[in-house]
Image 1 (cartoon, helix red, strand yellow):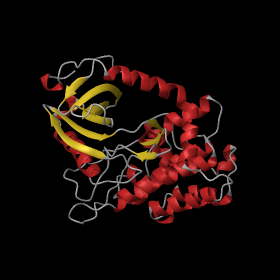
Image 2 (cartoon, helix red, strand yellow):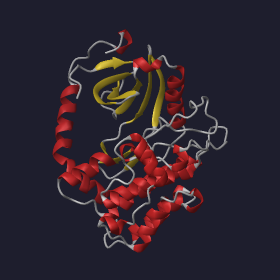
Image 3 (cartoon, one colour):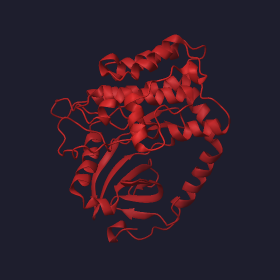
Length: 334
């Protein structure tokens, strides 16, 4: 966690660094004019990349695309712009953990994620995807939005049992204002669809395949396509037979097994044709559980896994709120 004091950044105050990736960094922040108001997440394009016209266009396009989305299972974009030379997107702050961290924590405690909760999480993720796929712009024209990076890292589970799809940084719309460089793959290889790897035209069914990989790995506790290097991983997505879960030691109800294997069909015409279809199939499975999953049940499970560190984070955040402000971001890079 960043040790520097909170610092002004336009109309926001950057409190601490949440993460830094290859393209952007994300800060926990608050509005300068509303110290007691809700937190926000400020995503900033790394300075070294802001001079690249395509990367800058892709970053700003992400913010504009997300500003059209208003759904409980998609993190909302609140603001898009520049502060000095820093392009940024302000997003709703999601207090939780991503699916990768969640599954790793459960494994470290030698616990298996309950089937019902796994299906509930992916169901809600698919409901967010379906909304994005169907979303229209202000002119009423469908955006034909494809996420292209559906993965455990980009699905957050909140401490009160919510599910949020994040990071549309490699998403693409039919009216995109920039073109991806020919032959360049965008996203995490082990969760890509075959058509994405082949750089063929894609539609919403590509995201369905990726959601199927997430679902399969959560259900089996095994990586599906990950290889020893990027080339092997890409080849696995294109060619490796998908083992039925029972071969990996996980016997699933027949309907659930059929659902996940259908999502993983390499022929996109044989997959669920809409994310809503996959969501509905998982919802039916959840409704037939002895104890159907709910946000309250998921939230209590998250509190059990992460409760102590959540309380520690709250205390650290309260302490940082009282620190004097450092140098304004308008004056230069940190």
